[in-house]
Length: 92
Image (tube, rainbow, N blue to C red; front, top):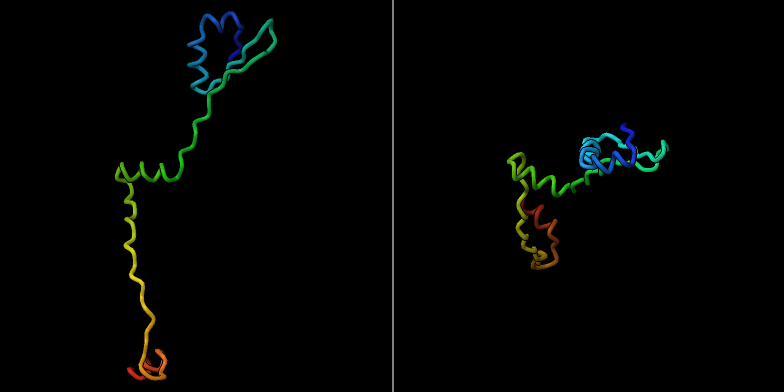
């Protein structure tokens, strides 16, 4: 933590901003009393999707391909009154 007066902050603003970027809290004082604080801006979290795409670009993972659409199966129609289960049992 660094304490800095307003006048010194004005003259060396870039230096104190660099300190804040590195994670050091810069407390601005006026007549010896704290009036403001410079802190590092939190880095926004990337979404999981963004992280996965980045890993894929780097070759760390392979993303799944889109699934092919499955054909719809039609219900089995049998001749007579036998059910599909009966026909299956007869064929065994």
